[in-house]
Structure formats: structure tokens, C-alpha cells
Length: 196
Figure (cartoon, rainbow, N blue to C red):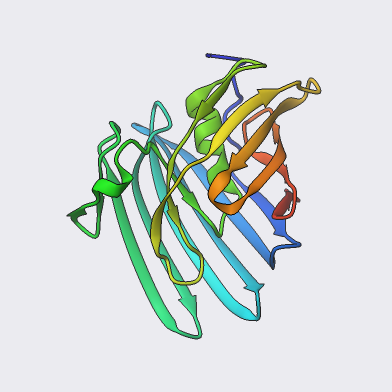
């Protein structure tokens, strides 16, 4: 582990969501005294449903999720979720212990391409290395929170960033994810592509 150092996140990034949904995501990461805060918004149409999700996620210096506020809107109404983590794999959801998330160090939003940057920064894998990265997974439409088992395997780079073979068995999904030198996903096949 402890592969190539990643550059500092830019002050803004954006993705066009396509294939699985039609939408757009903008995010604004900032460095804080204790790590990073990433604030963003995605609005999309998927399977005949329109939804919007706003998120504010704080990660510590080791890129472990510590706090996430997620607000969602759809025809069904407005919803809000607050997740808190101790950085050691224990979580609270709406202030209540969430033992089903034990061992997760990342939050992963179905609505966001940006949240795939957290495990890449945290794991810092060398080419040829792989690691499991279970996450607290927040659904886009109803903000339901589940545990998501996922795995990242670092594969050959093109010299400008990093590439990973990503798998999420529960969705029978695997893809080659391409990241830039700051560890932000550039190409997420079937989900999103970076436009800024």
C-alpha cells in the first residue's frame, strides 16, 4: 500500500451523470484543520423519477468519513440523513448506533461520483494491490442507508492519474474506474464522466 501521492483536491469539480440516470453533479471540496469537507449537489432523473440530493461530508486527515449530512428531494417529499462515524468503523445514524455499518470507513452516495474519491485517498494502493472498502451506502431516492461491500484493485496507470478495477457484488457490478492525479473519478462507466 501507500502508492503514489495524490495532488490536493481542486476547489470545484463536476460530473455529467449518464446511462443509469440523466443528471448533473457539482461539488466544492475544501481543506479544513482536521481534513476535508466536500459539499455538493446532484439533480437527476432515473427510472422515471426526478430527485435532487445535497450533501456535506467531512473526512479526517486519513480520509475516513467522520460526518455526513445528506438532504434529498423528490415527488415523495424532503428527507434528511445525518451519519456520524468515529473513524474506527463505528457509526451513528440519526444519533442511534448503527452496528450494521461496523467496519465501514467511508460513506458512498448512490447520487454522487465524488464519494468514490474517499477510499482511493484513504487506501493509497500500489499498482497490483487490492483492498475491500465496505461503505455506508446512501440511496438517492429515499436516502435509505445500507452496508455496501465493495473492492478496489489498482491497475496500470496511464501516467496522468490512477485506474482501478471496482466491484460491488450486491449489484453484480464491476467497472474500470479512471481517476485524475487528485484522486477524483474522471470516468465511471455507466454512471458519470467528469466535465470540470
